[in-house]
Length: 613
Image (cartoon, rainbow, N blue to C red; front, side, top):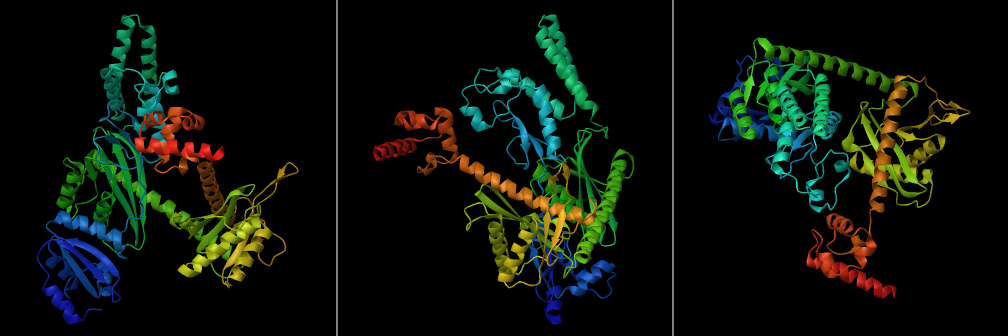
């Protein structure tokens, strides 16, 4: 802890320059990271006895024992540094944006000779056009499906496009012109891309006018097949547009940020509007918020847009921000064009902000209701099952194998009733090489407990997918590890018996008969959720290993031959047998295979033939 005189000296020597200040507690832990136009004015304002500080700020200062600061050249640099330091230190009293989800976008590769449209989750400065973000991957896939049905543009990747020798099925379905294999008029293809752009930019009337003109011209030329095709395109577009609601008369890309606050809990809600249409939304929940509202919104913006995301032309917020000019400058530099932060007082923008506020309020109510329900379920598990403690941290184990082959185990972790995916774990079974679920479960649980003891991170409750046998295995593993303060239960799936489905059964240690809860019981729902998540996670890993094994090839044993070259060879020759009999010259003619690679492949199979002989 800094001595009062030392702290006073630091305060008196603060420069009147922009920068970032870092408040610390007596143990040196970072409490808060802030930015300032003038470090001297901002930091000293916290520690003046006569300062009329808000209650929340006064609480922060009372915990502060020391501070550091970093000078920057401009406010904009301070803004960027603040965001990076918050992500690094995750200070207790800052608003930390934990949601690192990358939203799906549509990417149109207009720099390619024959552009394609596909889904991505990262916006890059590569000259492509990006549309989004969309609220869900399903919404993006549906839009892609519609576009590829209406407009015959290519769907294959750059690599596949270069290697393809014959058209894919999309050409047969008249959903692609197959520029990979045939000479396609570039102007004709560009005209199709322009229509795709009109569709994505919601310029409906202009697009339909273009298509109507094409249809009429085709009819005049007696090209009735083309006229019918264009007519079907127009109908498909009109049907799609009927489902999309225009909520803004201005065709401007906008993000609207509204929020609702109840004490120290704040719910931020974003509306994504592109070309006048709402294409998605997202809620963010923050707990133990000790900052004033304007600081929260400002920090949220700087953290949200610091990641590679689409930046709209306008960002609508409820009030003027302290560093608004610096934020606009920073965002404009990232976007490459002027970005405005708007505080509406009336009209359409104000209505959109009110919509965001109402959605934030509703999201808060829904989240609070969910939290209360989970709290009741956790308390119910504690008391109903006579556990030692409330299971704030639960881990569920499952085994997946096919006749003992590629056997794997999974562990998923829920904290306060919610999944913590960064703590999920996969386990390759090492000690059991035949079908033995009990042996596999024992190995996985014991390995997890050993790591948990080492990391000082053990759960309150272990849930095993199974009945009395699996529960006994969990108990044996814990006993051998000397762990006696963790509870365990078994959850056995319902089954069909005599044409009827049996209920789910919960097995408790020391109880002969299982506990059966009613179908819609909140406790059962929570346990089913963690059990099903564990099962999904195990199955996904098992499939991945099986697929990897199925795609393994003798080519993997050859030096310098990786997945891309292996794929090129198999696509070019069609089979491993033909690769084995190919000459060095034939091997070297394959895309991405060098002469050195070709010699290695040829020598490898020649040597194998000698050994076989």
